[in-house]
Image (cartoon, rainbow, N blue to C red; front, top):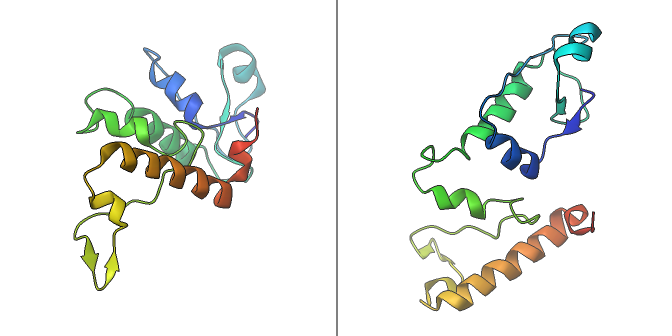
Length: 139
């Protein structure tokens, strides 16, 4: 509501905390006296109003929990998610390499891992420029 907007950097930082207590406001929020004396950080999930803080708490929880070691089968996959490096993810392709004539870019089946990594970096940058140019602005 009145807090800093949740982003991946904040989720990364909060995921390292030993303990978190999430207090969900309802309708108009949390009593100011509670905010003044007990709340150490207020977090918003966006510029809109919900009837309660429960959905925001779920969004925050999911963003944090997936970063805890052992939660994801492949722990390194979280390191390549959108926003980890202030870029959106590159396009994702799965098997088969040819589905109904729609083919995976040849570079991805080439076996040249350095070229594949470069392609992914280039595509992530292009994707970000096209869809979220605000992420490329130096902060």
